[in-house]
Amino acid sequence: MTILFINIAQLVNVRESAILLRGEALSQLPVIEDAYLLIEDGMIAAYGKMYELEINIPKLPKNIEDVAGRFIMPCWCDSHTHLVFAGTRENEFIDKINGLSYAEIAANGGGILNSAKKVNDASEDQLYETAMQRVHEVAKLGTGALEIKSGYGLSLAAELKMLRVIKKIKQQSDLTIKATFLGAHTFPLAYKENHEDYLNLIINEMLPAIASEKLADFVDVFCENGFFSTEETDKICQAGKVYGLKPKLHVNQLNSIGGIETGIKNNAVSLDHLETLTEKDIKLLGNFKGCSTLLPTAAFFLRMPYQPARALIHAGAAIVLASDYNPGSSPSGNMNFVTSLSCIQMKMLPQEVVNAATINGAFAIECEKENGSITLGKKANIIITKKIPSLAYLFYSFGTNNIDRVMIKGNFVL
Image (cartoon, rainbow, N blue to C red; front, top):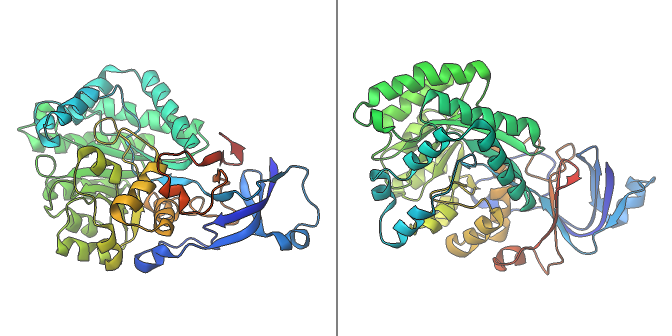
C-alpha cells in the first residue's frame, strides 16, 4: 500500500541514521513541523516539510490522507517483556496488598514458580493463542517491536515450548519480535539445593537444543540474591556466547550484588531493572557501552523506589524504557503508561522518554536498522496521535488514550 500523510503538525524523531543516545543527547529529539510522510510497500519512503511536497513528490499518489494537525511518531520498541505466559496471578496481587513482599511470595511457591506450573500445564497452542492476543493488544497501543522472554518453563521441554511459541509469533506477526532464553529465571524446586545440576541442564541440554532450532536471539539471567549469583550468571553468559546468544540481564532489581560488573564483563546488550543502584553502580552504567533499561511499571506495581533516571542520564548512561509485561510484577504492556510514569515519577523530559522508548529501545534488541525512528528505508511502524496541543500532552494526560491510529509495516492495526 502507498499512502501519503499531509499536514502533520509534527513528524517526531526524524533521523538520517541510528545512533544510541546517552546522557544529554537523550533530550535531543529532531522533529519536522508542518510535514508530510510517504509510505510505500510497508516502508518509510519520503518525508519533509509541506512546502517542499510538490517539488519532492511531483506525482502524488492516489491515497492521500490529511491528518489535520495530528502528530506522527515511530512506534514504541518494548525491549523487555515476558509476554508468553499461562494464567494470571491476581491472588498474589492480593497478597501484596496484605503486605507480603515479592521475595516472600516467591519463597512460598508463588511468583515465577507459580507461572512455571501454569506454563507446564498449558499446551503450545494455548500459549500461542493467548500470547497473540497480547501482541495484538500492545500493537493497538502503539508498540511496533517486542522482545519476548522464556523463563516460565524451567525444564527443557517447557522452555522449548515457550521459545517455539515465540518463534511462531515471529512468523505470524508483522511486529519485529526478538526472543530471549531465560531458563535462568529461578531454580525449580527440584534443584533448589542443587544449583550445579540445574546449571548443567541449562548449559549442556537447554542451550544446545535451543541453538539447534534457532529459537533465541539473546540469553538472560535473573542475577539476584535468592536466584542466580554473579558467578552462576557469568557461567551462563559464557555458555550462551558459544551459541551466538548475547546477554540481556536482569540486574539490581532488589539488591546490588555485582550483576552490573558481570554484565559489563560479558558485553551485555542491555542491563535491565536497576531499581537498586549505588553511586558506584551509576558511574559504571555511565561508562557502559550497552543499554540501561528501566522498567518503571514494575517499580510502580511492587511499590519499590523508582530508578534514578536523572542521575543515570547525568552520568552518561544510554537509558531505555520498557514495560516488563508479565503476570506477576507488571501485568501491562501499555508503553503509553510507561512513558507517562517515567515523566511523572522519574522526572524524565518528554523528549527523553520518546527517545528512550523508540530508538534506544530498538538498540536494546538490536533492531535499530529497521525500527525506532522516522528514517528512510525503515519499517512504516508509526503512531498517529489524536489532535493534541503539544508532544508533552501525550505524557501529561496519562489517563487518556491519545492514539488515533497505529500502522505496522504499512498496514493499520487500529
